[in-house]
Image 1 (cartoon, helix red, strand yellow):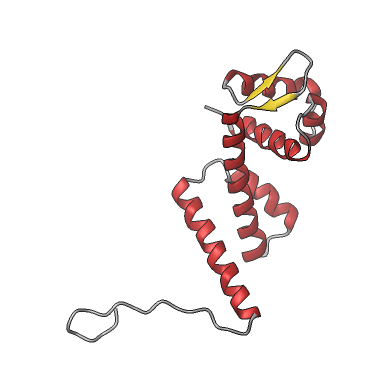
Image 2 (cartoon, rainbow, N blue to C red):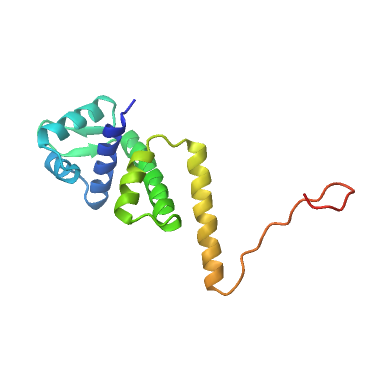
Length: 149
């Protein structure tokens, strides 16, 4: 089980590794704003749970499991950030910090609903840009009553 803080390190490594194949401990420390020994402690924990590989003084590489977990955290963070910033109008810096705090306790079901909401909102905005109104689903009718519920 990863703590919220260790998960943040996993996400940092993931984002750095999207720019390059391997990541150094000093890069992680700089990105997180911590000392190298502090980052080394978090990396050690990620190695213990099988999320990263690192030879002594070598570069950090995400394992398949580490990449899967990190990608999930990143998707959650991104969805929360978009909701906070684009929908609620929270300033970007605050939305990013808040998304980081919220991403650790969000259920899979809530994330799926949030992603669906953002997708529906985006498709509605695209339709409005085309000059077309988004289609609304028809309300179900009660059997025999003719009334809409």
